[in-house]
Image 1 (cartoon, rainbow, N blue to C red):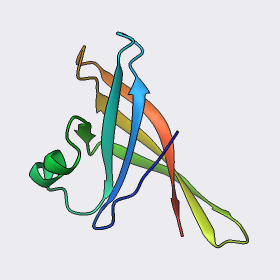
Image 2 (cartoon, rainbow, N blue to C red):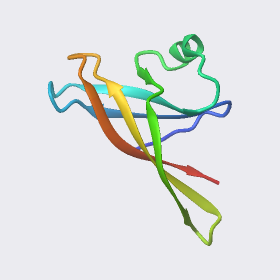
Image 3 (cartoon, helix red, strand yellow):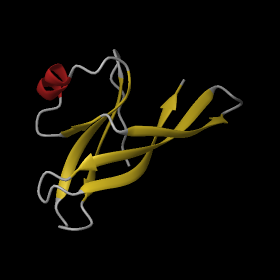
Length: 93
C-alpha cells in the first residue's frame, strides 16, 4: 500500500482491485483542503477522484514525532460502477 501526499491539500493515491469485477483501478482520495475537482482531474489523470473519506483514528509513533492516521475511503469502480470501501493510512510528520 503506497500513499503519497500532495502539498496544498492532503490527497492519498493508490491502486485497488475491485471485488466484484476483478479490475484494477487507481484512485486519488481527498483527505482535507479545498476540493477543486477540475484541478485534481488534470493532476491525477486516469484516477478515480473521491472526497468520501472518513478519518478513523490517529496513532503516535517514533517517540511521538510521527503521526499515523487510519482512514476509510469510498471510491466508485470505473469499470462496473460499484462503490468500493477500503482502509488506508497516511503519515504526518
